[in-house]
Length: 98
Image 1 (tube, rainbow, N blue to C red):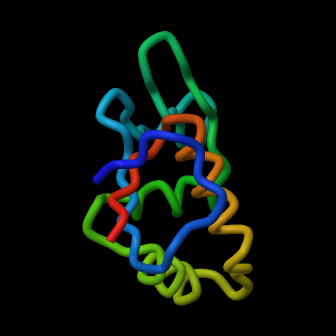
Image 2: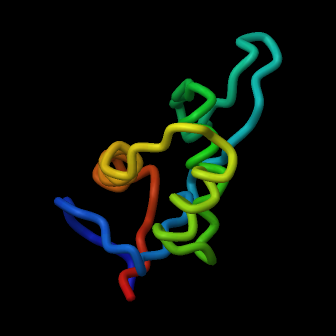
């Protein structure tokens, strides 16, 4: 069931996905990925975009962290989880809680 209120922590088994009113696109003018929504643009850094690209509703949080560890030398799991919590609380992500 998708989350409806603020969350404090993220379980390894949860499957986050981008909220249906948003889309992730590369903005060639900014040279960065952005989240586009109704009347809103959120600019992401490279790491943030790498996390959001993996939030497809199929991958678990544990799988997302593992994939990031394969791509980057230093991945702090707590920082990834904190980022996911902030996105979910801001209604950028929906989370299927297993």
